[in-house]
Image (cartoon, rainbow, N blue to C red; front, side, top):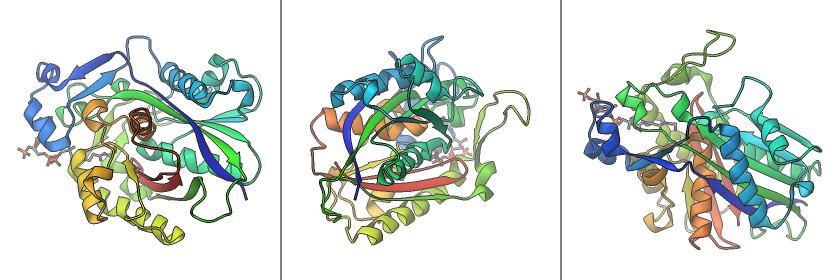
Length: 324
Ligand code: UT7
């Protein structure tokens, strides 16, 4: 039985960090309100001309270096993004070209903030079925480009960034939940919630890019329940539970949502990886960015049980339980 084992991780954040204090100059807000309601202290903003593909390429290069392999060893690239460079071609194909890779395949995946969990799950299916040996999974976003910078209810929340993992097929395990690699993943979506979080433009509707619109309180109301549901699914599928976890690496939208989800699941605060303070909500990039931080500072070690979850526009939501 093939398992998808993480062999490399990388990330990239643009140089420019925009602080809450600076945002006070742009809209009627206060650093205190932002920190209290969200936990966010700063977010990174892509430089003029710096695109999602550039961010994704930088994270991918670091992940390849971390894994000690080259693009010749990759069969497939899956990019999770809601902020592509162009309507087409897919941004993943642009990253593939920038990396000098002209074999295999690349495609984009669109599940907004849940995109990375959807991409990881898809990559895992390619590996489990023997269709791919190594998959580069990237989450990259430039949400600063779809933000209405006059709307204080959204512009303080989001940031730009990218993270990447490399998954490799491994037959080393015995098929038990002690194996390294992805143990289980659970994806959900429900389009009935479209109006609560969406972009008010697109090629087929308005022929414009549009801006992000969100009924924050409504999203918040659904978030914790949806997140905990798919985590319970992961526990039930594996027979593992919160006591077995080493790390909980949630999508980083709001520290209050993360804290409430962890509390509902009895996950100890010391096991929760938080980066929303430094990155804001980077949508599909938030989980691989947080993973990269926790691997590089030595928290996540080989063999650790790591729980990922995300929830976002659509709504889409999902969980993934893996042994590092
Ligand atoms: O990643 C995708 C999923 N997205 C999310 O998970 C986001 C989910 N939602 C949230 O994180 C929170 O709902 C927000 C952070 C967006 C808002 O926090 P909240 O505690 O739900 O606040 P609220 O929307 O109920 O607004 C409270 C007050 C309002 O004023 P009134 O109506 O009580 O007078 C807002 O107008 O705060 C006001 N407000 C602000 N004040 C200062 C809204 N935005 C701001 C702001 N600065 N930036």
